[in-house]
Image 1 (cartoon, rainbow, N blue to C red):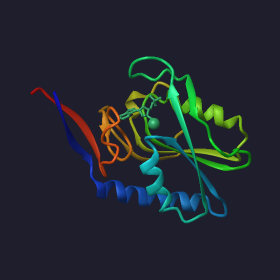
Image 2: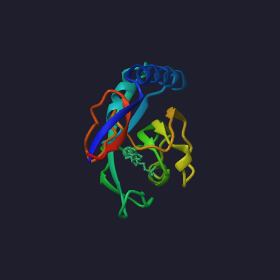
Image 3: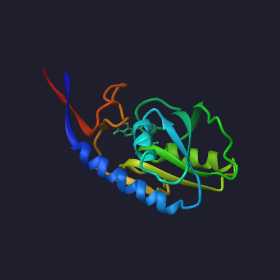
Length: 176
Ligand code: IMP
Ligand code: MG
């Protein structure tokens, strides 16, 4: 079996949309500092591109979580693999995610971070698969809603591959 990548969203489309989101976020956070939290590893490319287009002050922190349970479905009980370096108290937090699928990871993570008493928490995601949602998540900024297909690129991986693609693609398998 070999894999092929079919382009779903071109580099230009992603770029344009991130610029729009950056402008919207800059407007919404006038007079504030956006404390951007990147969910590793998938959120890293999106976070960098988005941050470059935000015109209000920004600070960065990084978190890595893994979902308990076997298989491809996340269980919703998350383990913190790498915690944040900074406290969240009184900060205006923007969680930056690659993709929201079932919503389990983010719904659990939000509750966990809310306990650290930030001034506000908002969620920004590059991709959203709304048809897969099991747990409700309040998403404030979405770049693209996509159908239920497995996508890679722009930080997203298949078996740790393709994170560096500058576009979003669907993985297709060939029998050969
Ligand atoms: P959930 O919302 O808790 O189901 O989990 C979302 C996480 O699953 C994302 O942060 C990704 O790491 C991973 N994921 C879901 N769908 C895809 C996909 O299409 N490609 C790559 N990773 C995905
Ligand atoms: Mg992720």
